[in-house]
Structure formats: C-alpha cells, structure tokens
Image (tube, rainbow, N blue to C red; front, side, top):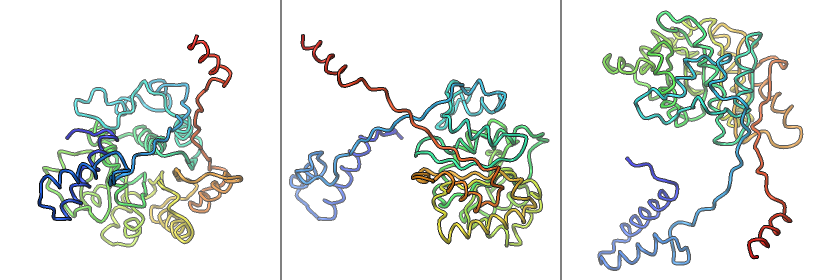
Length: 351
C-alpha cells in the first residue's frame, strides 16, 4: 500500500466524501453525478467543496544535543544503538533512530537522569507533539534491561507503561517489536488489555519471541516490559488468575511510566495516585526505589508551572521530592535577517 503525502490524503478525503454524498442522494444520471462530484471535490471552497483548504503552520525545530547517538556508548550500550539504528535489518523499518542522529536535549537529559546509577530518579517530560517523548523513557528502559545478565531471558515485570487509551497501546507495538526483535527474545514486552487473547498457538508465538502474545504466557513468564492501561492494572492487582505475575515480579519493578499525563486530573489524579501506591505494595517495592516517568505535550505553561508540575508527579507517584526533575523540550528559533538587510537585498536585486 502506497504511503500518501498529507496533501494526497486530503485529495483522497475530498474524493471519497464527494462519493459518499452522491451515493446518499441517489442520483442516477451519470453526467449530473460527475458534475456534482467535481464541485464537491474541488479545492475551491466557493464552489461548495466538502472540505476546507488546509491551514499550514510552521513548527520550530527542537534543540539538539552536541553528541550523536554513536557517541553515547558510555550511557547506552552499542548493541542497543545498533538495534535502534536498524541499518542491518533487511525488513522495512518505520522507527529507526539512526546512529548518526543527534538526540534532542530533552531526550538526552531524560536518559541521563533515568540511567543514573547512584540513586533512582523520576522525571516529568513536557514537550510538544512529535518531539520524541516516547524515546525519553523507552530508550533508558531498554538500556537498563540490557545491562542485566540474561540467561536465557529476563523474567518478571520491571517496567510498567500506562496509557489512557487502548489505541495508544496498540500504536506502540510496532516500535517495540522493531527495537526488541534484534535481541531474539532476551528482552520481551507484553501488551495487556481487554483484547489480549487467553492463548495463541505455539507456532505463532515462536515467530515473535520478543513479544508475549497471550495471557497464559504472560502469567507463566512475565516479560520485563508490560504495556497496559489503568483498568487492566487494577484487575491485575485483584484477580487471582493474574497473581503469578506479581509473584514472579516481586521486588523487580523499576519503572512506572504515565504517558499522556494530562489525562490524569481531578478525581482521576487521585485514583491513579492510590493505584500506584497499591502497585508498589503488590510488586513489593518502595516508591523511592521506582523511577516514575510522566510525559505530556499540553502541560507546563504559565508562571509558576515548574514547581506545580514537580508537585503533581510527587503527589501522584509518592516519589521523594528530591528525586524529581522537570525536563522541558526547547525549540530553536530561526535566525532571520533584519528588516534593513531584507530591504537592502531587494534594492540590490532591482538594480
């Protein structure tokens, strides 16, 4: 299937919307239907187009670090950098993080905090959409897991990644597959929601050793990375069938990630705070020993917001105030010529 550009997608939406309108109207005259479709699918809104013309807004680039990925081997292992790059993978990759790319400064700051070996640190990352917030927590989680001895694979949940919607959970599956597949099952993940089947055929499971595909395997051999939602996490703490997950993971939980943290406000924030405390009890860990990560693209504006955001993560997670850092994505403003320079340039061109 060909990948459409944004403008090609708009043209396709116009055409299909026009077809839908004509189909609902029951027009049988081919010439009339063709004329009406031409008007409805037109980019000229004055003719009655079904779709307004797009509004294009420029996005400022985010500030990059001075180092390339291949220069970070003291922080991130060489095998992980290779897995992120994926240059040796013959399959098509959608989530390559090339070795010659420079990470954004907010990504590097998050990696340095979360991979600090002196004491567990928690971070709240607030940065715009498309600025690589997922990499802020997923890269250090993988880097941490790869530091541990694996014989033949890691057992027990060490990282819980919480999403407010199942659609967001599913969107991470391809990325996780691409980044964990090179380790041939030594580093596994599981997506646990209401759609997770009870059991899948063994032949299908062998084709994807990096993923736990069913509840039976999840309970018998919990993977180190568990991606789920609040409801399923609540069930896990209560349901007898899920008790083996907690038993196998006792004392191993190291990361709890709240993606789309702005979803937890008011009563929802109070509920998630109580849930996280129960999670720590169920997994046999203390909040000060867990690295909490919260990410959002829409919080963090206004005077005095920095301290309020740190307090938010402290109240929700129970982590010590001294271990919480706020990391903001910084944009780089383009250097534009002065008005005098532009006028002079135009004058020179006219001469």
